[in-house]
Length: 255
Image (tube, rainbow, N blue to C red):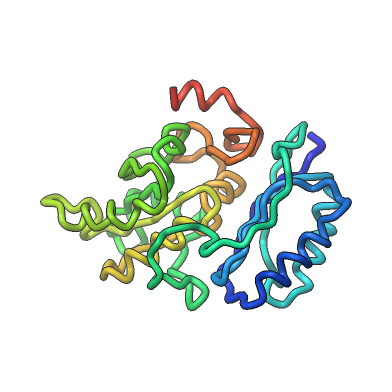
């Protein structure tokens, strides 16, 4: 494996988007790094791949900006470049939800780390004895490639549908979340962070996000309580619990 793949995001207020876009483009010029960097007033979201030294050099440069100091990237390896081109784009949101009241840069929802979630799932309840449910905030086809055993999956086709799906569940005769500790999860943490904030805004108090998402869970505790792989939006298609490419899992689990 010769190509280092990284995924990272941070919700932080950004006001100089065109200037930042230009600076990032310049920093990436000539590196042969490919992938996508998304910028919005709410923060940064990036998926990049390239030679390890070049990737590490770029991240060192990016972290020299105080807004991105300490930015943690999830790393995995592949034998070839999984992206076809490089894009640095300005967007209204770094992950589109169409719910302006949710402002993660103003404060994160409480998070549970991978080892704590595994322990809760091992024992069947949280540390207060309350039942725990995992809530998949990803698209249906992603969940079909792999998810936590018994996870709630509302079969959304895009993340903008999550608020309506949550509202429908709250209004349903049987509320799947009521009286339980809810852990929202996604690939790398960005969607489940917004989802957790939305649910807490609606009045659910025992809601957590899985810190770092599935990729960090795989890295720290492996396959426990999870079946299948994790869909990624590049040519690798799916990675397994060892963070190795397993594109055949798309066919075996998603049809």
